[in-house]
Image 1 (cartoon, rainbow, N blue to C red):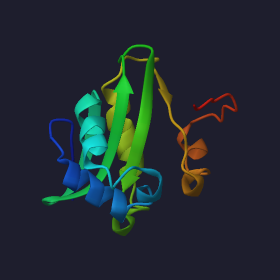
Image 2 (image 1 turned 180 degrees about the vertical axis):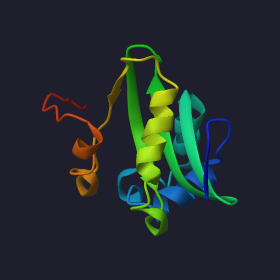
Image 3 (image 1 turned 90 degrees about the horizontal axis):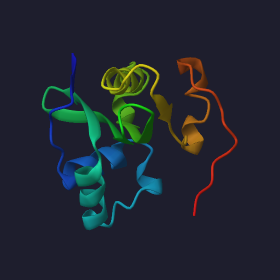
Image 4 (image 1 turned 90 degrees about the vertical axis):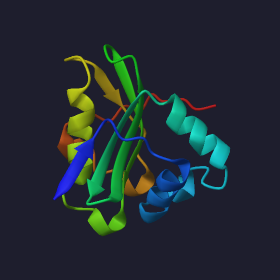
Length: 129
Protein backbone atom coordinates (compact mmCIF):
# COMPACT_ATOMS: atom_id res chain seq x y z
CA UNK A 1 0.00 0.00 0.00
CA UNK A 2 1.34 3.43 -0.97
CA UNK A 3 1.43 6.17 1.68
CA UNK A 4 1.42 9.84 0.63
CA UNK A 5 2.94 12.60 2.74
CA UNK A 6 3.31 16.35 2.66
CA UNK A 7 5.25 16.31 5.93
CA UNK A 8 8.25 14.20 4.92
CA UNK A 9 11.59 15.89 4.39
CA UNK A 10 13.63 14.48 1.54
CA UNK A 11 17.40 14.44 1.57
CA UNK A 12 19.20 15.35 -1.65
CA UNK A 13 20.52 11.76 -1.84
CA UNK A 14 17.02 10.27 -1.54
CA UNK A 15 15.65 12.64 -4.19
CA UNK A 16 18.57 11.96 -6.55
CA UNK A 17 18.03 8.22 -6.09
CA UNK A 18 14.35 8.62 -6.99
CA UNK A 19 15.22 10.72 -10.05
CA UNK A 20 17.58 7.95 -11.18
CA UNK A 21 14.87 5.32 -10.69
CA UNK A 22 12.37 7.44 -12.67
CA UNK A 23 12.83 8.96 -16.13
CA UNK A 24 13.83 12.43 -14.87
CA UNK A 25 17.53 11.95 -14.03
CA UNK A 26 18.66 12.81 -17.55
CA UNK A 27 17.01 16.26 -17.29
CA UNK A 28 17.93 17.16 -13.71
CA UNK A 29 21.29 18.23 -12.21
CA UNK A 30 21.84 14.98 -10.31
CA UNK A 31 25.63 15.50 -10.24
CA UNK A 32 25.16 18.81 -8.39
CA UNK A 33 24.06 17.91 -4.85
CA UNK A 34 24.07 21.58 -3.80
CA UNK A 35 21.61 22.45 -6.59
CA UNK A 36 19.36 19.51 -5.66
CA UNK A 37 19.50 20.59 -1.99
CA UNK A 38 18.47 24.10 -3.03
CA UNK A 39 15.64 22.73 -5.16
CA UNK A 40 14.28 20.82 -2.17
CA UNK A 41 14.84 23.57 0.41
CA UNK A 42 13.21 26.28 -1.68
CA UNK A 43 10.20 24.30 -2.88
CA UNK A 44 7.16 25.19 -0.86
CA UNK A 45 5.03 22.15 -1.67
CA UNK A 46 6.42 18.63 -1.72
CA UNK A 47 4.26 15.51 -1.84
CA UNK A 48 6.04 12.19 -1.49
CA UNK A 49 4.89 8.62 -2.09
CA UNK A 50 6.23 5.76 -0.01
CA UNK A 51 6.04 2.00 -0.40
CA UNK A 52 6.89 0.95 3.14
CA UNK A 53 10.05 2.93 3.86
CA UNK A 54 11.03 3.29 0.20
CA UNK A 55 10.51 6.59 -1.62
CA UNK A 56 8.73 5.71 -4.88
CA UNK A 57 7.39 9.08 -5.99
CA UNK A 58 7.51 12.82 -5.48
CA UNK A 59 5.75 15.93 -6.74
CA UNK A 60 7.87 19.05 -6.11
CA UNK A 61 6.21 22.44 -6.62
CA UNK A 62 6.73 26.17 -6.23
CA UNK A 63 3.46 27.96 -5.54
CA UNK A 64 1.59 30.88 -4.00
CA UNK A 65 -1.22 28.37 -3.24
CA UNK A 66 -3.89 30.75 -4.63
CA UNK A 67 -3.25 31.66 -8.25
CA UNK A 68 -0.51 29.46 -9.69
CA UNK A 69 1.41 26.33 -8.81
CA UNK A 70 4.40 25.28 -10.92
CA UNK A 71 4.77 21.51 -10.63
CA UNK A 72 8.47 21.33 -11.37
CA UNK A 73 9.07 17.62 -10.81
CA UNK A 74 6.71 14.68 -10.97
CA UNK A 75 8.83 11.58 -10.50
CA UNK A 76 7.69 8.00 -10.01
CA UNK A 77 10.12 5.09 -9.82
CA UNK A 78 9.87 3.01 -12.98
CA UNK A 79 9.14 -0.05 -10.82
CA UNK A 80 5.98 1.68 -9.58
CA UNK A 81 4.74 3.40 -12.73
CA UNK A 82 1.28 2.67 -14.17
CA UNK A 83 -0.17 2.16 -10.68
CA UNK A 84 -1.83 5.58 -10.31
CA UNK A 85 0.92 7.05 -8.15
CA UNK A 86 1.60 10.02 -10.45
CA UNK A 87 -2.10 10.81 -10.62
CA UNK A 88 -2.38 10.56 -6.83
CA UNK A 89 0.64 12.85 -6.37
CA UNK A 90 -1.08 15.44 -8.57
CA UNK A 91 -4.34 15.04 -6.62
CA UNK A 92 -2.54 15.46 -3.27
CA UNK A 93 -0.80 18.55 -4.67
CA UNK A 94 -4.09 20.05 -5.82
CA UNK A 95 -5.69 19.30 -2.44
CA UNK A 96 -3.21 21.73 -0.86
CA UNK A 97 -4.13 24.52 -3.30
CA UNK A 98 -7.00 26.99 -3.24
CA UNK A 99 -9.82 25.97 -5.58
CA UNK A 100 -9.11 27.44 -8.99
CA UNK A 101 -5.34 27.66 -8.51
CA UNK A 102 -3.71 26.84 -11.86
CA UNK A 103 -1.39 23.83 -11.94
CA UNK A 104 1.37 24.47 -14.48
CA UNK A 105 4.06 22.07 -15.67
CA UNK A 106 6.43 21.30 -18.49
CA UNK A 107 6.12 17.68 -19.58
CA UNK A 108 9.18 15.52 -20.06
CA UNK A 109 9.29 14.16 -23.62
CA UNK A 110 8.49 10.62 -22.42
CA UNK A 111 5.45 11.90 -20.52
CA UNK A 112 4.04 14.21 -23.19
CA UNK A 113 0.82 12.21 -23.60
CA UNK A 114 0.37 11.52 -19.87
CA UNK A 115 -1.24 14.78 -18.81
CA UNK A 116 -4.14 15.36 -21.22
CA UNK A 117 -6.23 12.43 -19.88
CA UNK A 118 -5.75 13.92 -16.39
CA UNK A 119 -7.47 17.14 -17.46
CA UNK A 120 -4.45 19.26 -18.41
CA UNK A 121 -4.63 21.45 -21.50
CA UNK A 122 -1.64 21.91 -23.80
CA UNK A 123 -0.39 25.50 -23.88
CA UNK A 124 2.14 26.34 -26.60
CA UNK A 125 3.23 29.58 -24.90
CA UNK A 126 6.20 28.73 -22.73
CA UNK A 127 9.52 30.50 -22.70
CA UNK A 128 12.75 29.32 -21.07
CA UNK A 129 15.97 31.26 -20.70
